[in-house]
Every structure is written in C-alpha cells, then in structure tokens.
Length: 210
Image (cartoon, rainbow, N blue to C red):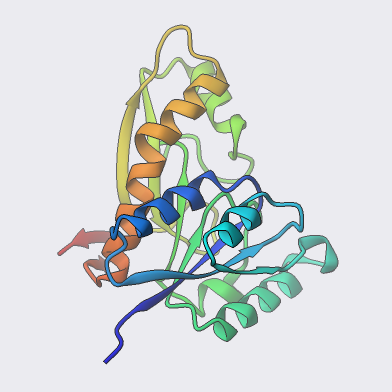
C-alpha cells in the first residue's frame, strides 16, 4: 500500500524555499511526502531549474496569460487536481489564489511568511516590504510563520513560528537573509513533514500538533 503524499510546490522566483524542501527531502526529512511537481507562475523562475536539476517534474502556469485571478485560480485548481496533489506548498509564490483553489484543498495548502503573523502580514506585505516595515517599527525580534492558506491573505491557521533576532544595523536585505536561513528554511520543511504525516489538527481556527 502506497501512502506517499504528493507535494506540489508553487513558485514565482528564485526558489530558495523550494531548495530547502528539496534538501530536506534528500535528507529523508519530509516524512511520507514526496515533491512530485513544481508549478511556476513565471517561465523565467529559477526555481524551475532547481526542480529540473533534481529530477522533479515542472509545469508553468503563467499568471499574465489569464484575464483575472478567478480564471487563473480555476486553472491552478485543475492543474493541482491533475497532479494528484495531496499537499500544496507556496514557496515564494507571488499570486494570491481565490477560494476556487483554497476550497478544493482545505487545510492542505501551506505558505511561509517572513514575519511573525499577525505582524507585518496581509496584502502588500511580501518580499523586502515585510522587512522594511519591521525595521521602520524598530522591532527587536522578527521571524517566519508557516500557516495554512485561505482565500484571505496570510490569515489561515498558524502551524509553526520561529523568532529571529533583529540587529541595530540590519538592512531589509540582511534581515531577509537571516530570517530565511534561521527560520524559513527550517520551519517550512518541518511543517510540510507534519502535514504529510497527518500530525496537524485544526480546531476553531487553531492548529494542534499531535
């Protein structure tokens, strides 16, 4: 009996979080999950090269080929169903998909956000913007959050969080790098492993790890 879970990773850019997942998989750290496909919203996403280098199937679903989010979301949902996705991971995926996708994969889609939600999250908070705002506020700690994806941006139940110290001389770039290395690349593979091994329970919008 094959209980391997198909992990489909959605990407838009360089794919550093995808690489963290691939490295974890190569170390045997994704539980019964296996990355079966990588889907990119841009044809020039370097993440596609990372996937190909590791023998992982790739697809592109170009955002600008679709008139609106609704039609793109439906196309993405159909692609995920076609790929028999058990778990869907946003790894630097820059498009907010609507309920057409979220409702098809409830509590099966995860995203990593480069801040401690509910701080510095929601619409407009992505990439370096998150770290710029954190530094503007003078926070002493920031970090990363892995959460379930819902139709509302960054609002799904929180799975794992990890705090990272902020230094007085940080720039958005240095903070981004530290949060990736110390938090994102550690908690994203861990959350995916927990989800694949069915160790996460969601009750009343909160998660509990079995």
